[in-house]
Amino acid sequence: MIQITPQMRILVAVAAVDFRKGIDGLARICREVLAADPFSGWLFVFRNRRQTALRILVYDGQGFWLAHKRLSRNRFRWWPTSAGAATSLEAHQLQRLIVAGDPHAPDAAPVWRRVATR
Image (cartoon, rainbow, N blue to C red; front, side, top):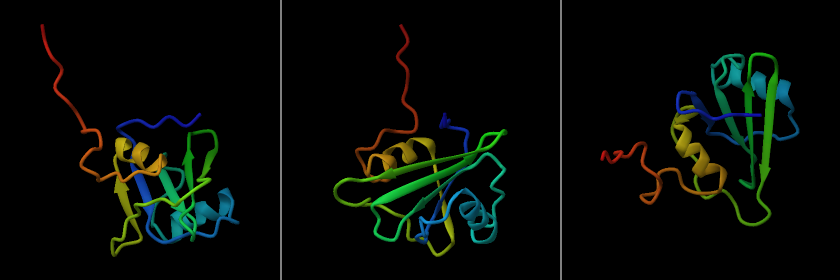
């Protein structure tokens, strides 16, 4: 199981990826395009050209996990447009992206909130 923690580094590839690529092809993109080590334990997020599907690649110390989500309707509304090959997200922003939301929307959950003391 992929467990997303606040301490994880999450890289989102800006350019669309050919989803015929499997784990090895995505790991090569991590090395060559994103200039990151696919064995680092970071989460790498990719999207297809039509913006209807996501793939998440992560190495857990024993092997790779590859998660795939395809929307039955609509497209992922938000995607980074930075000049670089990748941009980073925080864990709560990735969770918002996975449900086809905008991680930077004003109604997104805050990074932290004050705990009331008695």
